[in-house]
Length: 403
Ligand SMILES: Cc1cc2nc3c(=O)[nH]c(=O)nc-3n(C[C@H](O)[C@H](O)[C@H](O)COP(=O)(O)OP(=O)(O)OC[C@H]3O[C@@H](n4cnc5c(N)ncnc54)[C@H](O)[C@@H]3O)c2cc1C
Image 1: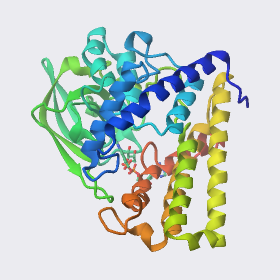
Image 2: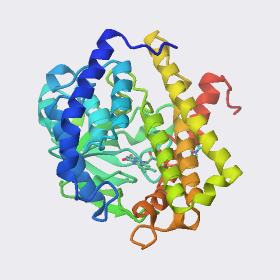
Image 3: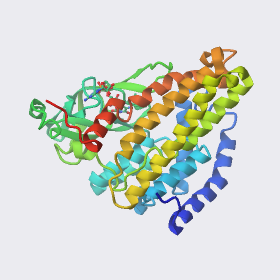
Image 4: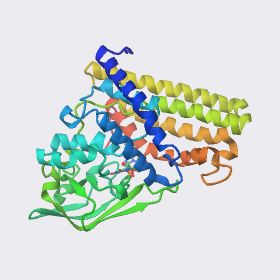
């Protein structure tokens, strides 16, 4: 493992640091007194803050570092991606408005879109003019997207779409989304063919016949959505890639693999310090409990382990080696620590840890209680724990499933 940065990477880091030093404090000052990410005005208000921050980043050409230079990107290397994640975490920069659009959908349009499609959609993602979502999952297709059934049938210059998507993050705020539909229902007949009958489309969510219904989750927020399609006519020129190429479109990255959890070790360590500080103020006896003290120490060690796992993945990429099993291991590690920390926080705070926002005794605006519920998602979203374990068993340990 090599921890030293080369001159180009140091220059990248220094330029980013200087830009953040100049722009982040003014941005935060402008938003002072406004509702933050967990403020009482909720998710929609937090999204406006994210929009403003993404637009500020784009002004400095820091919004889409992996995109080509012609699209205000920097064609960042994997090491620069890790630097970017760590620097953003170090200053606790706000999240961005189109995270899905910048990191996933934009690269798919750059790789698969015609020049006309790129002109039509990329600026809206980049400058946060519109919110973008992603519609892959369905009630019968999540871990295995080969099972999707929402049907798109060609009819002249349009496709007629019928079916249901689910768990679409922030679709109710989105104008556009990347959706996967089945264009060849025959391919569903066998395991071998089911990935080949899927086609990708960019859907304008204001199209008649498209309806978003928010789902209230266990935190009480409405961030997730069902999206229903009833004879919705999607123009054929909104198809991304060819018919049957949807699976390849969905698997696209911009060549450089990201080490997606770089930076998390910094935010998680900061969270751990914050919860110890909260306990010191509100429930100091907890910090004398040997069992809790051991859990705090163990959590610090696990966070450091995750940091080193990320560096090992990076080193492998630099040597031209595949960066797994570190990637599925890091996802497992991240979801496990996130849930461990969420549970530790409520235990450190004692009964106050469960006081929800709005209540007079809620600590830090009820953040820790909400986080306890919210973190259940980390072992489902972005690849469920069991699926990651299957990947590790199959690819890293070369264990074959018996039929
Ligand atoms: C917060 C959040 C945001 C999301 N946002 C989006 C979004 O924007 N767009 C979108 O399309 N989707 C989104 N999803 C959906 C997410 O991708 C799916 O929930 C995830 O892929 C799991 O699919 P599922 O819910 O259908 O569960 P299932 O696939 O039905 O899995 C249920 C359980 O069975 C286990 N399991 C499944 N298959 C296997 C197997 N082969 N071996 C062993 N165990 C198995 C799983 O690990 C899991 O524990 C989001 C989910 C969450 C929680």
